[in-house]
Image 1 (cartoon, rainbow, N blue to C red):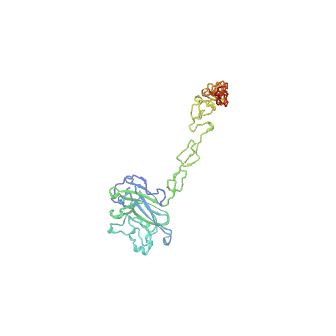
Image 2 (image 1 turned 90 degrees about the vertical axis):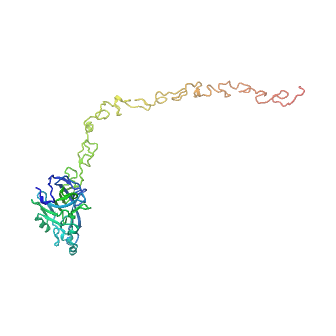
Image 3 (image 1 turned 135 degrees about the vertical axis):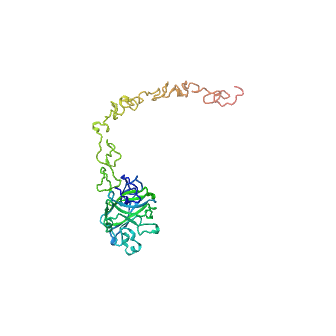
Length: 428
């Protein structure tokens, strides 16, 4: 049942049990608190969640070994108002330390009595445990602030005041609020958060509460946010089907890897898995199983192919193979090779003996084709192609005109060839 008195300006709850992760909680499991939201009214809204911030880790003095936290309600808008934190038998209000809370003798369940003067008297008072809405000290009326008002007095107040954890799950419920809700300390402000509690303890810390928020100050369309938190976070893979499942993990950090077959040659290869779990199924090539489909390879090794023969094993089916066998160096299928006079068959010497040559005549058989030969025949002793030889007066030529012999001499005045008579005047 819904407690009308637990909320400011109540609007009928729809009881939808819509669950959403806080967008500020454990994105990479690198913060100290896990939080979740259950929206009890309307559609889930982005940007709301709890934040647990460490104020101090005490290493000495009376608080040695303790840690002080502050619990905030994160909001989606700077103008959002956080007006109440409650719990009942539908969703409990709880603050549970592993051991106990530190409660300073000078403090109360709220920060109203905390002031610089008292802290100077007892510095540990600054780390007292208390609940609040938006204040960490006395409220200031001039600033428009108001302290918290307890809703339906309950035993949890005295239990908390004694330093013990509590769970408020009674039928009537209880909690704290601010009256009026227009007090300035209900506004989220630039940091988009409102302080709900300061808690000092020496161990794990957990809790839950239903927080009422007026989104952007709208008190007629309020949000009832069921929130929980727990500092006892063990990060890891929480999926039992994952290869790296961690049984002790209570917060999934997104590290889950799923096993499968990582062998690309296997029938059940899975490119999406990161860890081989030994499940690979390889095709049985001894049975000529073609891959994983069960088709047999044909003569050329093609799965499901129709080639019946490949006698030369060249990967070309015999019924379309240009040569069933091998081409020799001359390009002849199964030929003997370059064993002929001019190597390959079809290549013959021409009339001058040149393999593959084009000469058709060499009449004098001098090795020079007639169509390029300077002399088709023989040169005589005078160098004349097919000439008569040295048959003239001077061998290859006659006596030159004007000369009387082949030596170039002339007759003298007496008619003697090569003589020295220059003149025969009487002609005797």
